[in-house]
Amino acid sequence: QVQLVESGGGVVQPGGSLRLSCAASGLTFTYYAMGWFRQAPGKEREFVGTISRSGRITSFADSVKGRFTISRDDAKSTVDLQMNNLGSEDSAAYYCAARLTGYPETAYTSEQEYTSWGQGTQVTVSS
Image (cartoon, rainbow, N blue to C red; front, side):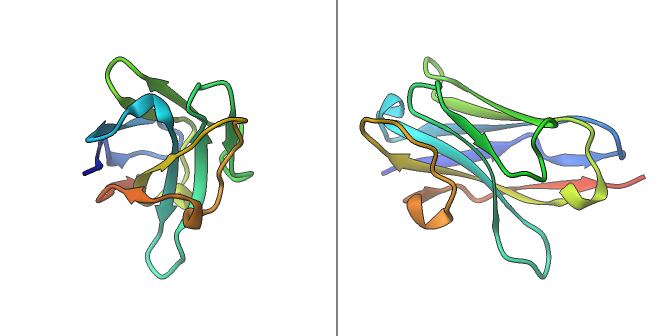
C-alpha cells in the first residue's frame, strides 16, 4: 500500500521561504513520477509542480515558476518542494501525489493522472 506523508508546512512571512518534504513508502519509488498540488479554502485543488521518475523532467504551474523548485532523493524515497518568495496567494494545503509511470517520461500536471495522495500539509503566508 502506497503511503505518502508530507511535512514542512507552517506559517511564514511574505517573501519568505519554506521547504516541504514528502516521504513515500510501500512503493518502488524510482518507478513513480511525483507531483505537488495545493488547495486553498473555497478553491479547487490545483497543480503546483511535478518531477519525473528519473528526475530529468520537471514542470511547474505558471504561478510558481521561478519561485518553486522540486527535487527527489531516490535513496530516501522523498520528494521536496522548495518554495521561495512566498506570497499570500501561496497559502493553501499542499498535497504530495504519486503515479506509477514508464518510459518515455512526461510531465503529469492533472490530478486525475495521479493514483496516490498524501494527507496534506498547511502553508500559511502571513505577516
